[in-house]
Image 1 (cartoon, rainbow, N blue to C red):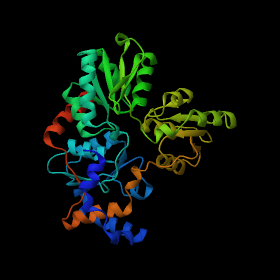
Image 2: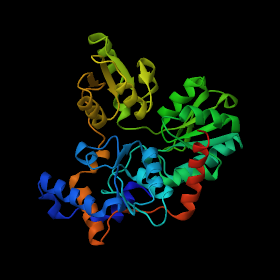
Image 3: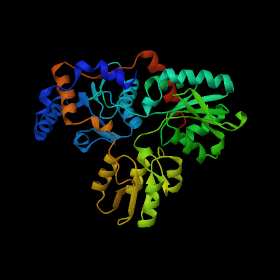
Image 4: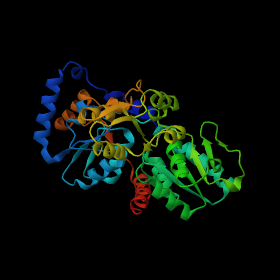
Length: 369
């Protein structure tokens, strides 16, 4: 189901007017009181890209898969209010028990990248690619994808990947099949495969809008088929941003997320997952200068938490992720009060068949660790 469908489905469950008139302190006091009342029955995971106003109430922070795994390990929580985006809450629902309920405070909190690959496009692409290349392709999907896409990958023998373990999973995939189909982020797929020695001219791009394969080489040489999707935040870091920094501030070290374009990653000093970036900053020597190419809420938090470092965003005009910023105090409070009142809103439920297939894809990844 697309985010548009979800928004329509939830049209009768939009934020009540009264939440727009509370002061910040009133909302914070109410949230603290509910957390105290519910105790271990409530668990609030918060993604690294969330606003500070929400993160302050998170019981755990991390990346999407890490948070879903923490949710799965928390057997006491009956209510999991996920402060992130829709695909993250889906993964949490897949990995938790039937006795646990997952909520997304604002159903408009989607992910543009995940929405760039729907199951209908994917099944059409798979049929075409099977006709072109035969049974030589293993599908992989970034965890930043819908439950339906994870389930498709699971049904076809593939696995999920994270930005932290993409290298290991792609290596494994090449022991299974001659080619891989990498969904939905072309940049992470390209950067990972290139780092493993796959030439750029051995990579094709599947265009889901036109149902076409973009590739000029010989079919026999094609090793990687990249889905034409991207992160709308990370694609806004440019080679020109790097050129200006090199010219005006050559001592500043540039570190970016591998969801950035291949050209940006190649011209940076380092690249890695969100956790990797955080770890590098935490280990940095005092006084060192950094430019970070990732989501602004995280960059701003790193600036606040490390006053001994000189940290800036690689793109000075970058804005926070719009969909991540959907989760705010009013929506968090509404979600919590609806639980208290027994009128729960924005429940995330993945059907049993989809969950089972998606778990296969997740398990194949986790077995590689």
